[in-house]
Image (cartoon, rainbow, N blue to C red; front, side, top):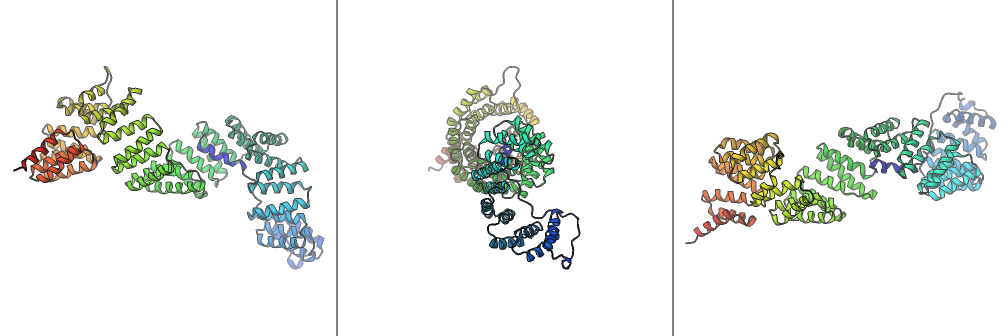
Amino acid sequence: MTNATVLILQLLAAQAPAPQAAPPEKPAIAAPRADKLPDDPDALYKLGTAFLSQNQPRRAVAPLTKLVSLTPDGAPARVALARALRLSGDVDKAKAVLDAALAALPEEATLRSERGLLARIQDDTDEAITQYSVATELAPQDAELRFNLGEVLQRANRTDDAIEAYREALKLDGTLQVARLNLGKALAEKGQNAEAKETLREVLRQNAGDAEAHYNLGVILMRENDATGAFAEYQAAIKADPKHARAQNNLGVVLDGQGNARKAAEAFTRAIALDPKYAEAHFNLGLSCFQLGENAKATRAFEKALLLEPRRSSGPYTQLGLLYLAQGKKTQAVSAFQKAIEKSADDGKKTTEAYQGLARAYLGLGKVDEAVATLKTAVETFPDEPGTRSGYGDALRAKGDLDGAIAQYTESLRLAPTTENRLVLAEAYAKKHVGAQARPLYEAVLKEDPNHRGAKLGLADLLLAMGDYVAAEKLLTPAAGEEPDTGALARLGILHSRRGRPDLAVPELELVVAKDPAQLEARAELGFLYLRGGDESKAVQVLSDLLAVEPRNSLGLLYLGHTLYRQGKPKDAEKSFRGASQVDPVAGEPHFALAQLLESTGRKDEAKKEYAEAVRLQPDHADAKTALQKLVASDVP
């Protein structure tokens, strides 16, 4: 079930709109001047009610006001005057007239009914219930009063009481279809779907063109996962009432659930054309456009939905945040995700998606600490959610806390032992140069899927870092007649470079760089090969181009340092080596290269520290060990 479907099922219990305070007047009979009004009560009553029947309530006020002054004990005059004032938009005066009349005539049901209607207009549901309840006691045979009471009870979420009121109304008047329709809605709200469907079908047996009955029957069928039946009912509702915006919207929901995002978007667009302030349709249109990859349209739709209903649930804010991320609008994404998290605390619909989106936006802005704090909160809120653990691990890794990242990836793998989670953990161990932990994870993936590209390339990188070139070459060499992809060919080139076979490595790496410039490690290795071949200018060009694309590429910085040193630029080389060690704080090689430079320039104490750091980070670095031992020995008298 899609997000659109879930949201739209909430529309089932929508009530009929409260009466409008002031319908438009249309020209009819002319109103006499106040000083020309007759003194006869019957004439005044006929004149006032004639204006009301012609939708001219303002003209009705003067004769009815005079009538009330001539007949202070007459309930019909007061009811008519209050109605004229209400329809004219002067609800405060209408309330004053009715309250005064009820003080004098508390047992007049028509006054109670009009007062209940006025309370509904003012959204005073409790007062409306009180007035309609008393009115039904005063006029127990009035079916419409029972119906009105049922409506305000349902609006107050007193559904059981509303059902009883509707049933009583139908006992008094079995032809009151609006009561039967609302009874069907209320029964469905209580989950009594079988009786609700039968009640709505009874409405349709008496009037096959009742759009509301078709619509609500469609909502129930949708709730029961009968998409075909729901689709037919929504179409019937639209046929009966082409301006039924909610039916158009729900038609789109069915189409969306069937995977037809384009048709769904068209239905949502029609719903919006019928009701431009229909926030739900704008939101659903955003979802469909998002699925279609029409991000700009989706963004506008979500923004419109939130403009119409800024207090709505967290879902639209999360979707909008994702769209902003996709468009590179990271600052706007932060605001949207923050709003989603805030709203989720109110609507009780907390999900990890908003937290993870907010963290991604922070990372995109370079705010690693904020991303870490966000995901720490998410993990505390959703401790058993593997995706949140994995996201927290990503943030910690970006901050350079590999131990913390590994702890989170390990927990994520425990909660969800998926291939993806194994690979993420393996990559973290490999990044930390802990091959004993990384290798079994890669091998476990390849045991299940021998051709898994990510696992194969990850393991190859690990083997290269460990110096196990034989195993790496065996893993990367394609089968007879099979062309290696650029990822595998890049690693073969690096392998041949490090095994002292530039004759093989250079053409392989040049081919990779030409086909796939995104293979940054291959570009770095090719630059180093040019340096070793004596072409320093070409090496600088390749490595500089690489670092222009990715200034934090550790291998590129390391090799550029070697090149600059060869060119007699020790200060620039030192800066480059230090940059490499900062980018990859667990790698020993940049420290070793820096130590060699420092030793060559007579800075032996600093060199010893760098050799020692290289050995600490990479205990099997034989050259660093030997160089450190020689320096220490040279200090002995």
